[in-house]
Length: 180
Image (cartoon, rainbow, N blue to C red; front, side, top):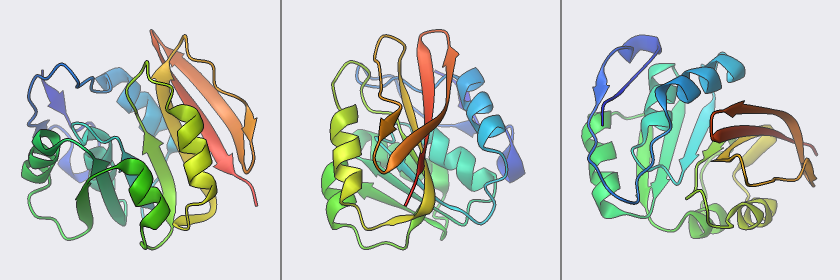
């Protein structure tokens, strides 16, 4: 499986990864579309939950995000993310439960959250519910959920309002803005 950074200062570099039955990296064309849609992220704090390969957060670092946090439960994946970020100071890796991190984390507010949980597990309701109590969200935080096209997500889950939804083959990217 070959993954590479598409844009920014590290554009063209390959991301080290490994085959694993529980790993489903975001396809390159979807990643490229995602960053085209969200535009300039320079200076934003970016949270990559269910990080897997970490390629979305790594792309955000390459595109000058101020800080990126990767949250991933599986040790084999966090080790690869660590190899790929080369001890950068403007990021950290949390190996652990996403929901516990969202509820107990004490980081500065995040402007952008990218979530790519396992496709066929009903985790989206729990993500919305947990984010309701998360204290690490900036005003107008952008939440992006990657999901299978057969999974229907609501348009409005206070305080989240869907602003866009795009389909790429079997994958949908749903964009939500936090409204105060």
